Image (cartoon, rainbow, N blue to C red):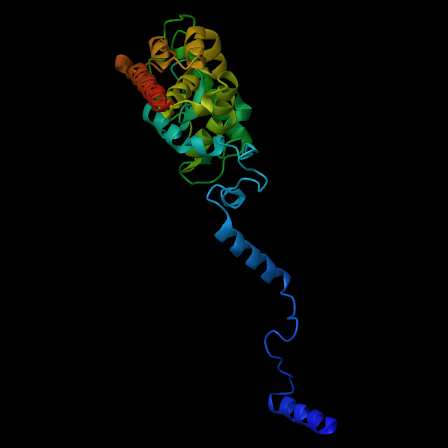
Length: 298
């Protein structure tokens, strides 16, 4: 009898492809793989976890050990990378400065190029990718130095000793001094680089809350720093700086007027008016947020 039973089982195994089929519940199934176990655990947790539980926190980028009795730590992401639109700031400057791809003297008598970019010395000029306008060939360092010095010596055309005087000539007056120009896009990139590396960095040092300021206030501060320098803004406008640090942008608007020379000599003082209006807009936005916060406070 035992031989008959064994023969029947072997025959059944052969008919099913050589694999003995075991009825459900008659043996312990093989354990799932690691990936299957993780997937099953995640699915079960998603169904069982409350809306405010750790799983939801993990999906939102908060560490899994954060919960109702454990405050979530601050994100290490740098908010400055997303709150400042450097391209828009560059466009603001372009409105006032224009884009001159050659070297010229600004209203204060400094060699300048592009979107109001001051060149402090010949080395700063040599660092830029100048090319010959007629041929498009790259300029050599000696050629760049010569062009810089030619423009620089033309400050004798107006009275530098008179503090109220400014350059009576427009930028085009210097366009024919040499045939060196910046290639397309270079002036725009130069403005963006200086905003990121110099002005925004300096403004964040001067105003610790700068990244949290309303966008109109940021735009106004960048424009003032661009014409005065961050250091000049700090030393020449102490009341303005104090008002901005206090978040009092209405008072800052009253303290924001630059002299025409420092303002680029803009006819009708339009640049000062625009800056003042930006600060007043920032004041209105700040007031609206404060009012809303009081209304929703329990």
